[in-house]
Length: 531
Picture 1 (cartoon, rainbow, N blue to C red):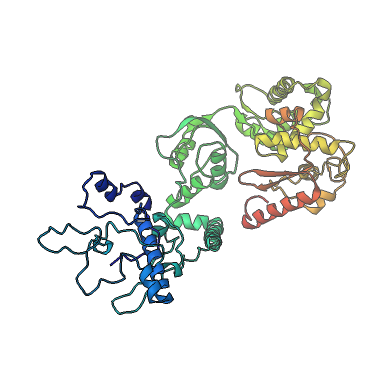
Picture 2 (cartoon, rainbow, N blue to C red):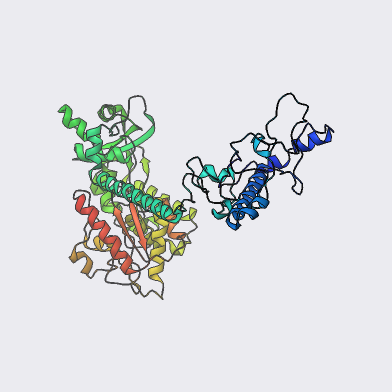
């Protein structure tokens, strides 16, 4: 029975096209009568696909012959019957010679192996199945599209089982879904990070305390190095001394020395004077050093930057042992020291001084004025401009906290003094000048309403331009900043964190108000920090 055709193309068709035809090979051997000759008028199929197509054409031709009549069908019948006859097969031109001892079966193509099918006639009839039903001709079946093995395995092509190509995947929908999922993940991660930041910013100290993440408040033993000078004034107790030790770099935190005194129940007596200690000491070691008379420097005085004359004289008296009245009389006549101003404010240069026991108060003051002149000369200040530069430098010294900010504050002063100033119209509006003019020296940065409105020659909220003289004793950095202001358009500034000295500089009043609110928020959270 002929090989049934398949509805899909043979992927190995090209391979069979290249294989030699076995019947041609047998014919070339010249063995006449032993092999079956190909039917006249038909060429040997070159592949299995060609064989199937030829069989389909013969089946269609036989079916057409049966429909035309017995005579026409008999003349159109192919050598390959639709089904093998019941009677013994008759000999054909390709049968074996009659001299064979036994009759041979018919050598028609139906008897050939299916691997080398004989050519079929162009017309084909429907083939019968075992159940007696006729199969529709191959030409009546829908042609399967040419497909590759890759298409069958990837699911992009049709198969005999599913019969059609699966619908294409909606890649765009999958891509959109992926982006949506990614967006949800990012929102969740961002929300968690934001919540963690808020919690950490609000409860950082509590979290560190609970988790044990706090840094040690004190230095470790054996870390002490260098030199540090600490001044103790008359009446100083544990709190102020603890802050002085921290400011001098002796202790690690401002309160560790005071906390140590409270925890150990100690209440020692501290004597005024200048003490020579080391940096990075433990609180216990600092206490021992302050109680050791060998560390007290005799006839010495340490004047910090930014003090007024009235604040400096008691320190000089304590350090040198000279009566305070002698110093008050010594500063009464500035002309004695070559100063043409009405006061020595700004001229008592802040530094560490050591004097001989026989030194007088006048000699001490002269030494300090001479040191101020050296600093002015080093900064390149002309002699005629000394008083003006000391005035600007004293404001810078009182207003700025970080060294880099000294030069920015100097620029703000120059920008407000400029004739085209349309923000403050020539007024400096510095709280330090208003506080000095009314005598508010309690150390707070906020000015009272009385200080801001009092009509005194130092109040730059009331009077434009510079005050009539310095308001404090500036150091080297402040004098240099007065001579070399930074470049910038700033008109305003405010220190928003008094502990760290963080200062915000702005160009307009509206921007300045935003920074002021930030300072107020910090002060409300730190009510005991000098606001």
